Amino acid sequence: MLFRKPLAITALLGCCAQFAFADTIQLKDATVTGKILAEKADSLVVDVGFTVLQIPRSAIINVTKASTATMPATTTTTPSANGRFYSSDAKVAGVHDVSSLVKQIGEAVVQVKNPGGLGSGFFINEDGYLITNFHVIEGETEISVEVYQQKNGQLDRETYKQVKIVAINKFQDLALLHIEDKNAPKFKYVTLGSSDSLNVGDAVFAIGSPLGLERTVTQGILSTKTRQLEGQLYLQTSTQINPGNSGGPLFNLAGEVVGVTNMKITFGEGLGFAIPVELVKNFLDHRDAFAYSTDNPNTPFRYLEPPTRTSLKTTEAK
Image 1: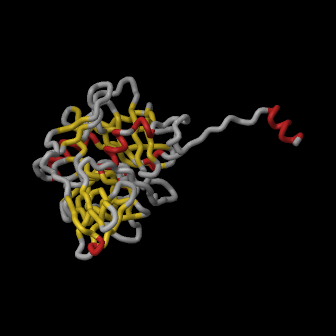
Image 2: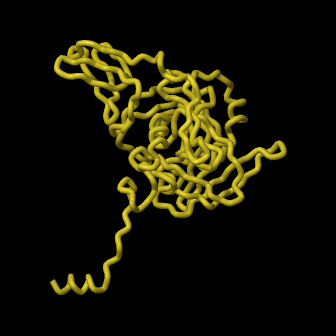
Image 3: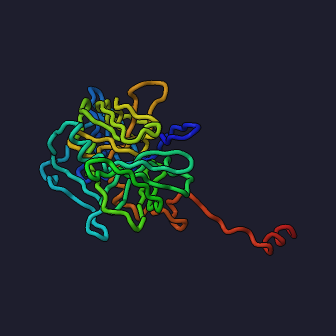
């Protein structure tokens, strides 16, 4: 939900998640491997990476669930030039109140501006790399990032205009940006959590710039973690989000990002949606494949060479 006129709601397609710890469902004539999302009385809902299957229990012979005993319980990072690209904590963190968390991590949330409108974003490392929605920067060449930092006991607003698009995934509505201003300091950043560990009813909160009102905090609960829209799974939340929240973080009460807010149902209240953080991690882990380059086949933009005068004459002659 980019804050612009007119307002457009983006519908997303595609899911290419990989499962390191997969559940196995043995059918009468086949085997399905994936992640069990929901167990209903008459069926199982299984995410197999590229789609979600609803398998009738009558067709299931046996279910073998992945063991979680061997899963790491330490902070993991993806290396970059400085040895760390983003921080992801797999262990169960403590619960804190929203007020104290906002003071700790609020500076990591930014406002992303362009001539067509504005959205939100958040830093994933101290070197100025940040996540936002693709639709926030789609078709724009002039991008600026507004950062709020604590100085002398008060928030100081700073705008950075040298912003590079590093990678984009149009179908999952994600974009990776980098602030390249020479005077840019080290930035505060967030930790990426896990939406898999969330339970329906868990408290979550968002920080963003709805309608341009920067640093707005809203709180709600996780309504469901398996809302399917156009073949894509979303986190549904009662947390109030509006145009301008797009690209901002959805936090759990440990202060970890569990989703990226990106759309809402406009004719209802408390019906917001966020991209699960697992998709964000996959995007960052494979950011080279989504590099913003005219030579990259994943880039949704094409720039063709203009026809030469000679080729025009040849065409006319035919």
